[in-house]
Length: 176
Length: 125
Image (cartoon, rainbow over all chains, first blue to last red; front, side, top):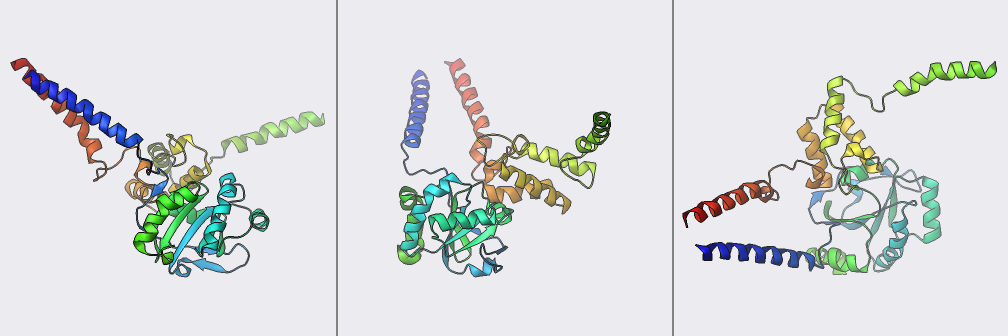
């Protein structure tokens, strides 16, 4: 019987050790990443520069949707990486989140425009439907479905570890 | 004298600003439901704080959305589903029973059984 008890105690300890060892050493685990597939919610939002209204119908194909704002410091850091993606022919749609129109336009004029177009979600209605908690956040969209949602700054590391595997698997953006 | 008149009116009108409610509801039941719900839903931007404890912009948006959904006649369950669909299961302090949470629900019973078994066998030896 004592052998049985010893076995239980030792195996429990080993189990905990293995669990935490694996958990701590998992470099590829990103808490900001969500790979649940969901439908792109319906929306009707104006373009940042014009009166043109965009809706979910304008989102055929594959896109990145990047949530940004002029008040967001991390977006400033992320911006150069988005420019790099744009130069690799990856279409990015900007979702300007809870921002004043003038501030947003000034910001883009100052730092460059990597976006195909920018929609101006002043009240954050679409953002709420998307489950956005702040800026920056980035979505990968394929045929009207959200397949990746990343909360936080996208950089080389996040791109390679979070987005690229999905892009390769789904064979989108010419598997860039 | 002018100051006295000013003070008199400011005291009279101050009651209007204090008395105004932050959110508007159709009934007292709706208001009670709202205040119960915001204690049961976590602010997605906070490490661990309920919507009730948070003034983060996203929490304010969610609170307005909850009021809108209450006014549309949605049940508490539907409101919670609406939010967990968008912000994930972690927004609920009391997560429902699903394939992701079954271990969470069963683990205490399982551990209790193991401990009971342990004592049961130990007495016999």
